[in-house]
Image (cartoon, rainbow, N blue to C red; front, side):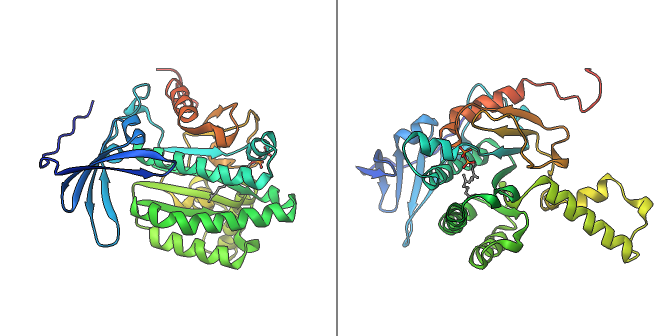
Length: 312
Ligand code: FPP
């Protein structure tokens, strides 16, 4: 159990403020420009927030975020380094509520935000999510256009926050058919966050495992044609270098989660999943949340990974 202590001055005043979904945050003002606060959300994580006012906004250090001990069901030393997620079930979630598929995708973004935050807090280093498959191009144009504009808006609105929280964003997939405005945002976000180290969020857009292997084959063939390498030199390491997951230090997910009860890999990462542990959750993606994530991680931590070897 991590202990954290802070020496703080005696509170000078108390105030309350509402934030996000109407949760009441209690604030103890410590001095003109600092405060200590508790809110239901932070209490759930057994945390508190210490803030300093700046001219633009409150700059706050959330002890819960920086120091949050893992939920007691989980073991820090057994946490996966790389988690991949197929966020399935947005359409059904919307349909169950008499809503349109895009309402489901909007709820899907909110669900993703929570999981990204938890990955950052719990020491997971890479999170790869399947946002749009090359196979999704056959969906109605109106849904595709909505998805792209949702990605663009989400990246624009969330990226400052992600950048501030030391999250690096990388996008993988065939970008040739993506709208120009989305491409511009992607390039900017990748560039601005490239040196961030807390969590790498890899978003697969216009991606499929077969596409990735295919483009890697082309890359290798070009290198052979240019006389840079001999055919005999082609090995696993070289293929690894050409796959789009070369954007990360940890290209092989330890755990793949798919929501909504479907038991398929659906052309997501293929080469990279060779020894990945699989977890299939019944919940639709917008309902998965913290409890679903804890359950998936608990299941992962109970597995014995042998990578083809014998039980020691
Ligand atoms: C699958 O649900 C989900 C998708 C095809 C899109 C997932 C995208 C998001 C959650 C948004 C991510 C946003 C960013 C910024 C990365 P489905 O429509 O196939 O569900 P169904 O099987 O119930 O129809």
